[in-house]
Length: 66
Image 1 (cartoon, one colour):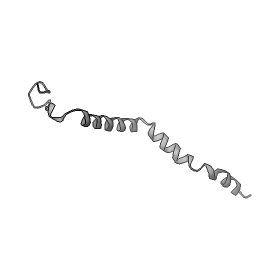
Image 2: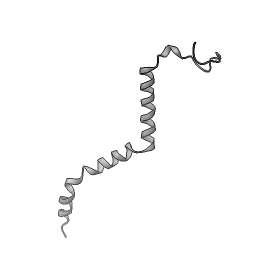
Image 3: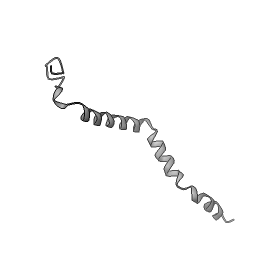
Image 4: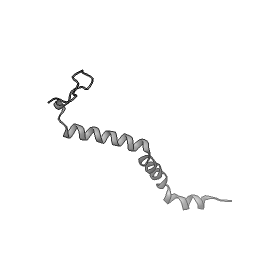
């Protein structure tokens, strides 16, 4: 029996498999955590001046300069 008609019927739908894999990755907790951490890092670098913070383990006790 010739199954080429099944291949011809499924051929227009081949793009859905990579789309489903990509959608699964984008909706995963792993990706959301990775993306969220990168977003927070970018926003912190953009909006928070770097000279206002001190190292909390430096022994100053405050962590923020007055």
